[in-house]
Amino acid sequence: MADWLFGAFALMLVLEGLLPFFSPRAWRQVFERALRLTDGQIRFIALGSMLTGLLLLAIWR
Image (cartoon, rainbow, N blue to C red; front, top):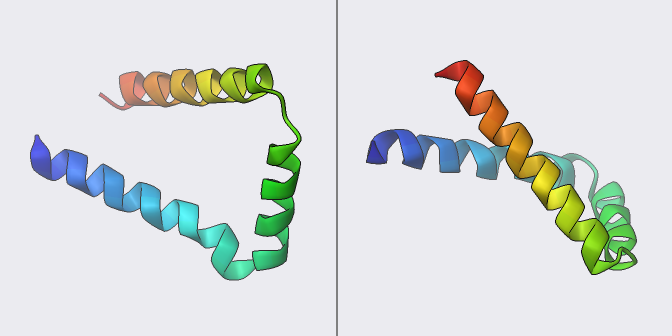
């Protein structure tokens, strides 16, 4: 179980590093826009991300 979780975490880090590596200007713009979001909007995006991740895990398993 720990090996699988470690691999998933490593893959997440790789994927999250792609945008700042290939396009630092776009990455900066994404964060500037994110700073203007309300707490409710951020929570909604986070909830959607978590539900999508759970759905993908359920399909994969």
